[in-house]
Image (tube, rainbow, N blue to C red; front, side):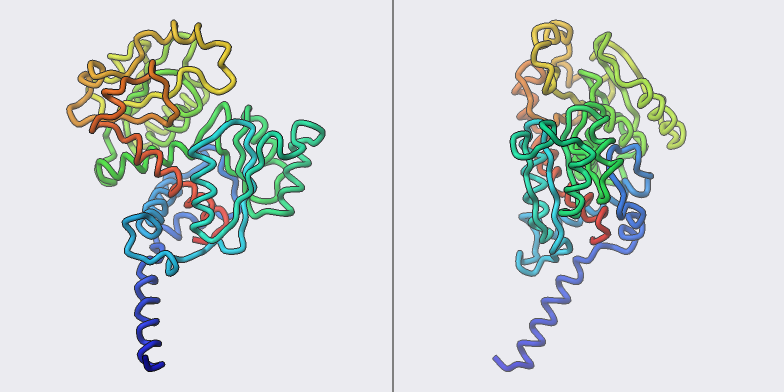
Length: 349
């Protein structure tokens, strides 16, 4: 092959890759996230949330299995960057999605489990934050209490990502919202109704906030004593007003929450660290199982979400494996969304 022909062919390939560049509107909407921590959906403006979802879809199109971009030609914007992943709790989706996603973007990841580092043994969260900040570009942490992720963020000199605390799980909400937009259409999300059935926990908290920011209605059914955080409820109600959606609907009856809803969401009734409460919780969550009869109370085209792992008492196999279930795309979106967060925080899209 003549050198001129080779150069022409190479240029055409490069132009093909260039067409996969992040849009200017997405880049502009995410400029303010560079260097910032990501601890909850509440910290994002509507524009930043929109930008992260759009960037997630861009990465899915660029790096996903259906991408027309050859792997070796895909951009590697995070080359030379690294993320330390502190995990005080078990993880499947968060760990695998972060490690794989960072690799796709050209960076490196380091898994730091409870027995791998000195944290909690003879080293404080403050000292851990200061030391890891000197080694890494980012720190992602799955912690027991939200005060721990706040302490990490207070002392770190690099951006922090909350990979789950007892109060928030923002990465999960990004994946949930992306799944809903992919299913219904980005321009058809506003006005949809999301119904939560189960424990008023960390997953619900960010889903409430994110749904309201996108103009969706929120309906919540929790047993007495398992309500969502009062402060987050108030924030969500304010967001509902600002985005001209219905006020948050609260009930203790699952049927009432899912009536005429478009999305039904549940989660584990017994979170990590609550194993001793298993028998008590199973009794108190009686009537909250998502089954075909409950799904019939929702709109005909309603879909089902669960952040996983799931237990048999929470949702029947009939619903879990049905056409209405968005479980698998929801889980797979965990990678595209954490990729978007890391890239935005580093200002390297």
